[in-house]
Length: 215
Ligand SMILES: [Zn+2]
Ligand SMILES: [Zn+2]
Image 1: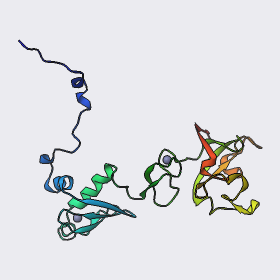
Image 2 (image 1 turned 135 degrees about the vertical axis):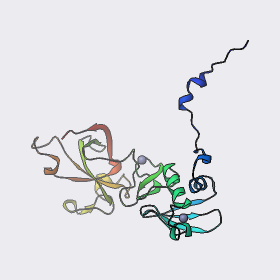
Image 3 (image 1 turned 120 degrees about the vertical axis):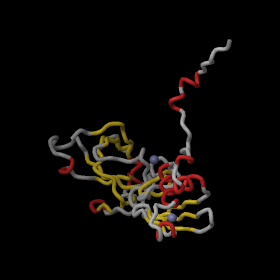
C-alpha cells in the first residue's frame, strides 16, 4: 500500500499559477492577442506601433482605445492589437501612456519615467514633505517640489548663476532634475512650507531620508 507523498512544494500550491491565461477559455481576439507574434513599440503620447504577425504595422492609441487596423476601424471591435498593447503594458514590457523608458537620473537603472518631467523612477521620486540632508552642509531640508527643469536650465537670480554653475553644485551632474526645498527649522517655527523661502538644489546633492515632515 502506498501513501501520498507530501513535498514542501505542495504546501505552496496556492502561490502557483500559470503565466499566461488559459487561452482555450478566451474569446478569439483575446487568445490571438496573447499567442500571435507581434512587436510593440512605444511612440510616446499614449501611441504604440504594433507590427502584426501578418507583417502589417498598425498604430494603437491606448488612451483613446483606437487602432488603425480594419478590424477596429471597419468592424469597430476591440482588436487584438489594442489588447496586445494593454497586455504588454500590464506585464511591464512597454511603458504605459505618459511614461517612457530611460535611465533614472537618481539610481541610473533603466526604468519607466515621466515623458514630460523629471526622469526619475518610482523609487527615486520625491514628494512634498520628504526630509533630506544637504550633502554639502549637513543641513536638514524639506522637499517642496520636484521641478521639470534641469540644473543647467534653472537660473538663480540672487546668485547670478544657474543651479549647475552655483559654486557648491559644481560636483553634481548639470542635467540633474532641480528640486525646490525649504529649511523647516529656521526662523518662524509656525510658518508652513508655502510661506518659507525656497531654494533650488540639484537632485543628487540631497540625501533623501526615510522620513516625512508632518504638516
Ligand atoms: Zn487593431
Ligand atoms: Zn531611480
